[in-house]
Structure formats: structure tokens, C-alpha cells
Image (tube, one colour):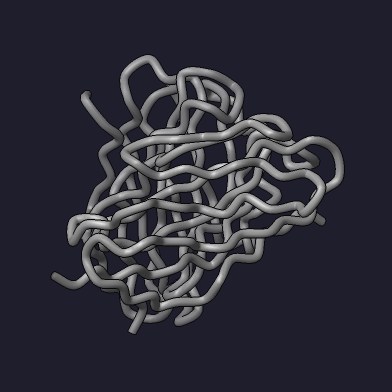
Length: 113
Length: 114
């Protein structure tokens, strides 16, 4: 079945460092890919999405490119801030599962001043 | 309302007790989803409503779990005879469309079964 694998955390970075969180997927068909972010005590928020191969999703300085050849959707940010500290979830949907999302286990990011 | 509202935020239940978790979706949203998030894991799909119709309940882990949305707005997830493995955060999401692109999640209900 469809699944998502993302790098394990926690990831600790200094402010202004470069961030990469790896995400790879397994799916039949043509899924859409998502990154969600969960700040402490809050619900999941959609960070960015891509609906087809080679699409790049971007938001708040974060980017991810849908790479069909490597089945990947890595999250990147050029310069992280303390306020980016959160748990990041890669998710897949729209393939076999239709409307349901398949989430990875999440990667915790801590950015220190 | 402005967002998806879930209540209670926290619930402690004794093993064997029945619980009911409420979700108020964004007004007018057609689609409503329930997910279960165990500690340290990603959310897992439980069930999906389109208006009042429950179109998919394939993710409900056992027949102790029951969800309803009788008037196509507020939804309740009920867990009967709670067990320790039911401890998790239960997330509700709603969408104005039947597809994937407009999900809005609530803050969740953290259920602890003791």
C-alpha cells in the first residue's frame, strides 16, 4: 500500500542554518504530496503541497519539489528561525487512498538562537 | 466558525469507560475526517463523512469505535469500553471540497485511558 518514510528526528539546528528534512514515498498511481507542520499545542497546518511530478510547493521560505524519479519530496529552507521549531509531517494522498492522507511519523525540529 | 473546533481538549477515562469526542467543522464544509495520532507517530485515517453520509470507515480500529454526523455539520467520535491502547490524540479535519487540497485540522482531543 501507499506509505511515506521521513527522516527521524529530533533535528537541532542553529538559527540561520540550512534545513533539509528527507521524505520518500511508495505509491501506485499519481499521488499528491504534502508537508504539514504542527507547532506545540496546536493542530496540523498545511505548509505546502505539490500535485504532480516536478511541481515545487513553497510557503514561508520552505520549499519541496515532487521528484517522481527518486520518489521523494524533501523539505528545505535556506535559513531557519527559532519560530520554525515544530514537528513536520510529510503526507501522501490521492493515489489509492483517494481523500485520505498517509502521514509519515514526523520529524521534530528545534532551532536554537 | 473560523476554524475546526474540538472538545474536550483533554480527556482522561478509566479503562472500560465510554467516551464521546466532539468536532465542530468550519461552517459549510462538506467533508469531515477523523484521524488518530499515537504518541510519536503520524496521524492515521479513521473515517470520512461527506455531509451526513459516512463514506469510509475502513480505518476504525475496532467495533468499539463509532462516528456519526447526523445533520451534516457537528460530528461525534464515540469509543466504547476504552482500553489503554486507545490513548492518543484524535484529530478532526474538514474541507469545503471532496478532494484533498483544502483540509483544515482542529487542535485535537488528547485521550488518556488509565
